[in-house]
Length: 417
Image (cartoon, rainbow, N blue to C red):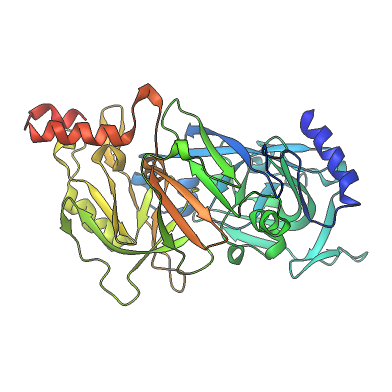
């Protein structure tokens, strides 16, 4: 009900405010924009991993989805969506979609929104569908499935309605059963750079940035461990989430939040994978449940690590480091190995992205639970810091230090870490 009231106020304000976005909840002492936290739910379930990869075995190893609330229309219709830095559009099932993949989720009904406009073409984002009904139909593929839909323009509010935009989105008229029938969320809200969207008006974050609705032109992501709160924070980042100083890397190719990686390390051994002129490229993707990379690299890593299915060698495995902007961002074995019912599997997925966007490595959920990430649109960079986890009063940093102390004593039970 509160979100509906906020959206009603937005409709009235839209007539007098020239900006496409409004901030309805301002941060204390802030005059030039606000910030808003969108809490995220975590659920372990096979889903988005299957959209973006093809490895059945690894897809089942460590699949988690983090999703939160978005509201669309007047009065508000609320949906649970993945906030996905690996895609560019807001995708929601529409009332016109009658497949089981859609009917099993909440569907957007444009006829119930006083502010909805059916849009004919992506390159004319303000032009309504004409009387003859001519319009574009877009098809978007997701590895093992696809969806088709039409363009709609409406009020879109993040979280409980603290920041709202007038923006365009894709309303699905068809969705394949796999993977959409399997996922616990309704849709996807793309947070990639505008180049990944159907057009500038389809990028929700871009609309917020252009309007000045946010305190800063950035957002930050904290993925909690089991039992912890998770969040996307728009407009700033939280110092109290940082377990180390932020380490910044520049965007190399706008579209994905993509940065250069100089090498991959296993323990202290450099693998020499990124010796070409363009080095390796890695995308930080909140919508991918695993780490991913080119199939030949993943096969080589699987062979080198030899993770025992019964977890018997977990304490003997090396750290895995990714050298970004001169700093090795390390994952401990407990970060990159998934453990379930006494079975261990390597949380790496083979993913071959063809040129010109690929080949590409992906930092998915295992990396994002270890590192707090900041996505700076103004300076076109991504920031990395160790995430300060509060579950059980410990942090991953202190866990790593304890692990080093245990190994230095050469105790055999170090493998229980």
